[in-house]
Length: 168
Length: 253
Image (cartoon, rainbow over all chains, first blue to last red; front, side):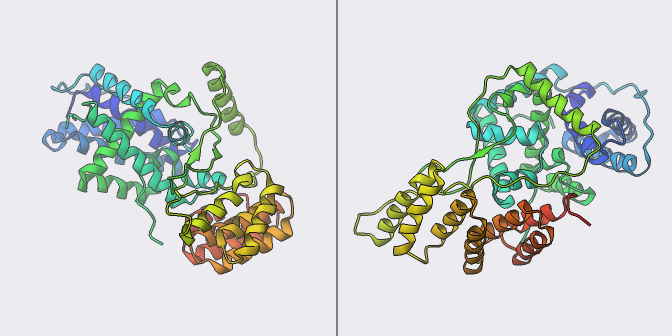
């Protein structure tokens, strides 16, 4: 698993978005992510070998966020401050992760205006495909295909730009 | 109809329930492509959190539909012409809108009327002697005023085309759209109904979808709900749209 700060820089925003989408207004998404991160840290301490894969740690974090968010929606979850000292490990620094993300963001400029507009509705406004489909009279299945094709294209652009290296 | 596998972007929009989230994460453990896609989305979420202007340069969030290029065959969403709204003002407006929605205690919004659908143009090939090519060219010519939203002229052109080709389903569909935008709602309804009855695929579904929205515009919830249920039962391309709309909170009890 990469350095803790690099890992959080990469996955905390998505974890926060997932918490917000599942818990709604019942809880602060940052509190949920904080607690999930604590759970992950505890799991890493118990069995670090299991979390050598970044992808595994990522999914553990997102699953924990999901569970905590749903619990918060049901009965108002408690949150705990991050007390445990993060582990020290080799791997890409947080700055490198942020730099890579910034370069990835620049790739969005290579998309067509209508493609950027569509992604803005999804990434920034968090609009559902159903809402977009209703507004535009487009079949949801068409939007699904469109979205998948866009993400595939972005991955290809990233690969060509030499950004497909992963720290897993 | 089998639902398409959601992308990682569905995690942002709250489209997935607990089981769907688990299925998505499980897929990333089975397929490296799915895992890479999730990582890509995570990175872009983080990048856009710091620099949302990477996507906001061309976007108010509402899109309009455009016709396709001649050699394109699938539906695309258009962007409105860029408006040079300063970024700070745009973000402030967006934040104020979100805050207003949170603060206001109001009824769920009744859906707005649909925008006119794009006309899907396909590249015309073949000599003038090719009947299929000639038909497509004649239809394209009839659709010329539609592209500029000249509804009356478009309706007249399509009437002329339909005199020679009365069974041309796309022409009947777009004629119905013209009726709708000329406020001839009874004629639009009859035209959409006929297209829906004669075509069991995308065009028929789309006609039924628009017919349901005509009833919604009239606040005829019972009729709209029946049409949407019909769409669900057809299990065609617009079935997911209909299901999603039926699940919205604005329906009267």
